[in-house]
Length: 340
Image 1 (tube, one colour):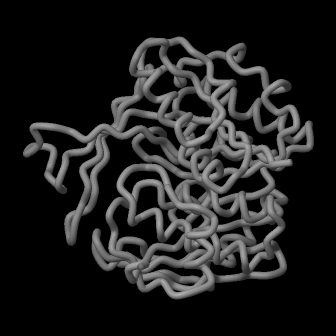
Image 2 (cartoon, rainbow, N blue to C red):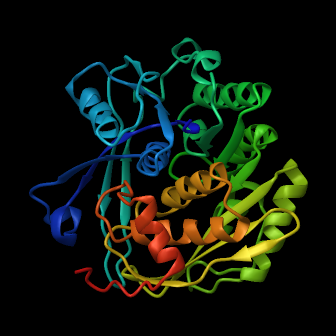
């Protein structure tokens, strides 16, 4: 019987200028759908998990298009509420070389941001659920969504469902003070935390000693970050992807995991980025799959690193990789040679 995963959050319409153009150059946009929790659900479905995505979508053709987009990849949409006026939009200008990517949100008053408690029957949604995944983005959408997220993780814990949370601090959605207040409550019910060094610092003031702007990563310092998170919230595991940015096109990529006793690190990948959006989400989806299929800590970190490195070679938010493709990279060469 396949393990059941539930993710909860917002899926948006993403509009991206083609061919690495700037917004001011664009006379057309590529249409993509995505969002942190939806991205995780798609990854998990690709790996064969019984994957559910929970959100609220407007009852119009755009909402239907977003629903169809996750459904086409095997994600169960039975618990998606319908209603509200609009689907959130974000504009993504893809960076290259020394020019970083840029995101502009147009998501105020979206259907999920204005959802209510009665839209989600958590007892029904969590029936036979093994794992529940949320991020720090969902509670940042509105004060009510903060309350609904807290309600959801609390109910999941009551029902014995494993809970993971990717901190995913977004400065364009809320302040550090607001994030710390709400996420401190959310984390009381979390078992597994995903947090890069920037998220940990911005949300809880926990520093690793890394300088993300210069690309200098302090891997040993991250173990201290993970230990502080474990001590603060009684967590089972903390994981992170660590990005060493040479420029917007060339990054080195490492994943680390810490369970309070053992600190493990993946092999390092040198990646030429096609689309970095969803890289962290693909790590989260891979981590969840690996843990639900009883992989060891080292196997989990290698699977997660390979999956998230591969994602950044794929346009769009979703990671369209199979278990076999990820494992081939995780356990073998990553040269990108043609398969004949």
